[in-house]
Length: 512
Image (cartoon, rainbow, N blue to C red; front, side):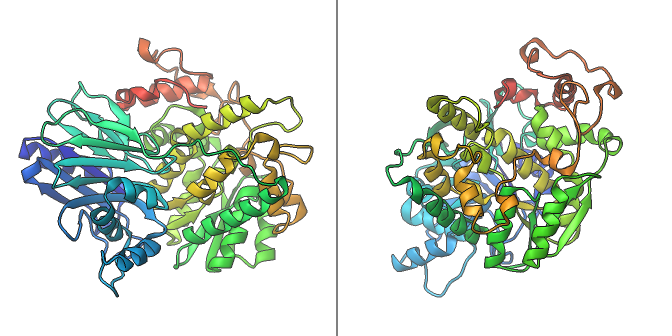
């Protein structure tokens, strides 16, 4: 992963200074020795840069990357997991030299040259975002993966338009510009000749055709897709799995071991953690080393609250609350020298893991709820994972959110995920063939509860402890008032606004 930034402006000095300032705000996303990689496309009034965290072909994957013909210049944050397959196809079509083995950013540049932007984006199996400049058509394009797993934002003003991986890199921009996300599954285009406002259009739609196969074939297909997704995301070097002992992360670990056994599992725990016994037993069964990380208590986390809000760039309780304990977990994984972490996020959103299978439910209502939760992922779990991972130089990969698996899950009616045996039934039936029975049937716990934290947003507030221990927050300005659903969110919102994030007007609504 990387931090990427770009600016479109006529003033060369502004481009240089602003790009440097944005990259400084994104330094934590890179690694010493690969910071401030940049270029100024003077003839187009555009500058691009990266703070790079090299994982794939680290010595040959420098950015910004120019395509072989010189038509495109690209900066990329993320991973193209099928870059070898794309390279083979490009070589077959004589677009890439035989015998060459470039990294994924270089393959992306070759693909842009050969197929163009739209066709390239549709061929990617990725978690990422990129900004590229088409020198021939004098156009800038910005693209984001199907669910917004990796971030990208922009701020447009008459004097300059800026792009960056995180909101904090844009808060110092012109006051008349609003910070907006490049929406998940979207392609933004901007005419560099007239500097007009960028146009955003979807390249991916979360509305596949309904499933018409046999019900009993669904678990087998889900298992195949998940196995392939894990295979693509397991690196060749040693890596980590963030393990809760719950259904989803346990299944990811079980499948990952088959691909590369050089894996270490990490579990976060406090006294009485429900997750810890399950994680211990699974790792013993698989012969995987398990590192048990003691979760910090409220007294240690409370002083970190403003910094956590700054990191995750939101005021929402469910993000901040579950991000804070990850400081200890991800710091330990990073200190142990790992750079890639696989996680189990996404299964609940896809397979109705938040729905009580014994309650009254309506197919239409549940389908809409699933859609809302997926639409919110770039603001909730994906935001938390990306920001907290990048805080410690870690690339978090999410096999359940693979595009092909996502599309298959979306084609399924809710009734196939819910029943007397529980929710997420396709996942549980896959797990029944791979995990101990009590793991396959284990009920969902949130990350913090599984680690052993006890709280309720209305009183004990959060992993930070009671709200009474915080100073009374300032009243928000009218456009931000009324958003906080719990007293603790009033505290988070106050910190959020104090740090300049009020420019991100799209956050003036609550996510699912």
